[in-house]
Amino acid sequence: MHWISKIPIQHHPKYAQIKYLSAKFQLHPLLTQHLYNRGFSDFDKLDAFIYPKLSNMYDPFLMNEMKHAVTRILKALQRNEHIHIFGDYDCDGITSSSILYLALKELGAVVTTQLPLRSEGYGLSVNAVQQLPESVSLIITVDNGSSALDALRAAKEKGIEVIVTDHHEVLNDRPDCLVFLNPKRKDNTYPFSNLCGAGVALKLVQATYITLNRDWIRGTEPFLDIVMLGTIADMMPLNDENRIFCYHGLRKLQQSPRKAFKILLDTLRTKSIDSSTIGFTVGPIFNACGRIGDPNPAASILQSTEPTLKQIKELISLNEKRKDITMEQFKFVLNIIQNERLHLSPVIVVKGDFHKGVIGILASRIVNHYKKPAIVIADDGTGSARSLQSSGFSIIDCISACGKYLKKFGGHQMAAGLSISPDESQIELFRYAIQLAAMKQKISIAANWYIGILPLEYFPRTMFNDLRALEPFGMGMPKPVFCSKNTQISEYSTFGKDKEHVKMSINQFIAYAFSKSNHFTDWNEGNLVDMLYTPHCYEDKNFLVQDCVVV
Image (cartoon, rainbow, N blue to C red):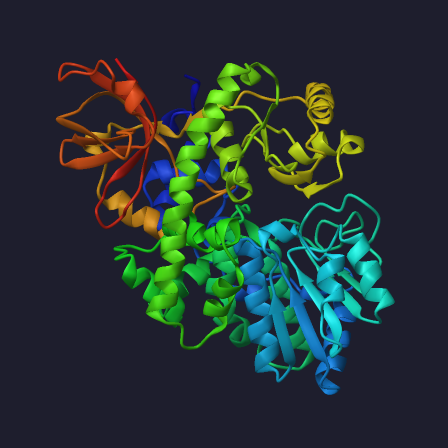
């Protein structure tokens, strides 16, 4: 247990300023302190955070080569050229391709979209280029393309120009394409580098509308719910421009959802819609298509004005299947790790008969379980890697140092993908090299931070409204965590297929502890519980337990 408290509010050196801001914005002092510690330390900064304005979005032409991209797109529109959008199979690829498709279609473009199956591999491929109809003269990649060197060469040989829009780390020199939009460029001039693929696509749309002298705020508003989904699902930090996207996208979803989202949320009987709904319910449903199915129908649903209930139910069903596969495979991967003692290494590298569609989820769950970076490799050599949040460890830097053992790789600090020869000797060489590379980085112990001690049974109900006003929460802007000491549980039960989850009644509140039933093996009514918790559903006023210890 590694729980660390922030400075108690009454001892905070800026206590008077926090109390002043708390009164001005009518926020609970603990929440004001939480925001103060994250840099919102005066009236203007806090005002901009609580009420983000679309007009504060950055000038899209600050992004390298944006003007060139817009010029080429407008030329294609004038000439009625066939534009082909090529995305990725994950939720970010689905959303970014849909944003660009809908915008270009509205401008009268001849435009098509294509997302690869996971079995076809990540990103634009030579095969995909060769199979394009002769009518295609311009490819625009979204959420991929920075490392598609062979495919870009094939496009050039075929006489097709390519605009690459991406957000992944640029591991080589500028790709050989007509235009390269990527806020992660080594020579980046854009003020915010943490856009997702959908965010980059939206900036391209914004720039196009500005060039056409159209009202770009009104023009981009219809896409804010889609860019919000892509940003949260791709686990981008919800600060700066991402917060503007997601704040307005979330409110659009709450107040006037597009038909696809309305049918989905109605079918799921969702009581409240917040960032948790997107991150834990809607995002995984769209991601499941690319994991174990075909992502193109999901993109068609977002791009359609008349999606059907049948289509939505098929998405939900696919995600339920993905959950079952993940549960079984996680048990399998834990057995391998324990039997081979792989958890003793700085980076857990595990290979086995895994479904390629869930190796990323498995890597994330291993990280959460062992508090170490993890790489999961399927039998064909396809691998997925995840880093440890708030550890300062870059998984892509680690993998890059071992590039000579890999066929290809790409990603960013928190997540990466790779391909390696499945030969056991090659895997062992890579596993050894990755440990050496990891030891050159400083990995800090991931601590569980909480902002103050607040007994759960006395949690102020008004704070639920405060938290709702501060949405969205997520990466880079987590929901505040509180500590409750010596908590009396009046009722306790387990649920889930393996009874792995816990439901607790505390005073008049309900708290859920997912995958924590092992903590309660010897629990009885006389036991008290120390716990870290965060508010969950604002309507039902319940909580999620982050960590707990039976006293």
